[in-house]
Image (cartoon, rainbow, N blue to C red):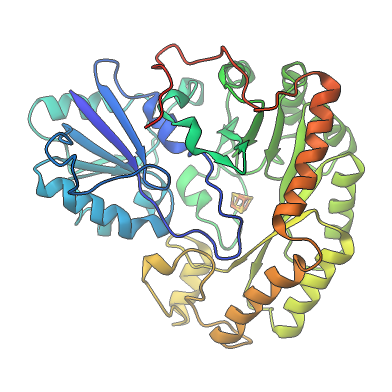
Length: 429
Ligand code: SF4
């Protein structure tokens, strides 16, 4: 039996450097595909997915599984599903955006898979062998035991596709799931429950050791959820000498020192106001050698033109190393969506526009057009003195210095000899 796992493409954020990271969800799913199934993977962002091209007759898997992370992937997911269903191939959809849009998706696919995948694909395989997959596999609130999460199968990735200007991209990995916070624009509490679920450190270490890349991105929602666990994790990472990026770390001198020692390179830190709390937080990361990429959402109800211009000045003043601006986007199942629906402020439900660089709601203090213009203003002003590539190159240079210092630098940044036991020889597609 042959399954084809597809990661649909979407339009990237306008203003952002156009690189592609190796996706995380498909490699996590691949690790759970039963051993007797031959698995093919296509990342529609970097691989050529020909729908109806020369491969039409040979491209006949027993199942197509769509891994859909973002709302903006939906339009392409619908196209892909229509094509394969037209050929009689059953299509199953899973992933974060499937959970957010399952009712709409179920009109386009044969089956929706809701929830986390560990231990659940054998049932799908059995159903398929017996003639039909179920219309819904609902595990949304039934989380698998966190210690059942094993190492992802990165051998399905075509590594040569994930290189930008000669630099291999970081590999994505996770050390925990869930989030105990409930921020207003975020669907994560709906998706992962409000409970922080750290993986056993031993399993994280095993997975990191298996990754054929010295540079990683811990995609955990936030490390800043359990101080004792952070300490244990960072201590365990020190000997591995990897360099990594992550979301926030607790603002605690001891933990930040340890995080740097463990290889922390830079953090994504939400910057939502111009307060001394933010100024101090950024300063403290940088004092410990950790760079900061500010993530800034524009268009909240207290944002007028003056506020947004002041926010951009503030980022330059406090010296964040990089900034990523997005426009507030009311994704389904987020607290902000509920508010805007109540207030009749949703302007568009065209999911192709839900890329976080388009205004799809009525802002409170300015017009949609003004907010869109201020979004462009923010990117241009922040990167006026040095463009994004130069600022990123500067961060990379600092990391290369550290790698040279601790003896882990490799010009290609790819190490060798660590492969997943089920991996096939690397090939260029
Ligand atoms: S924005 Fe981050 S910290 Fe806040 S709820 Fe979402 S994942 Fe948690």
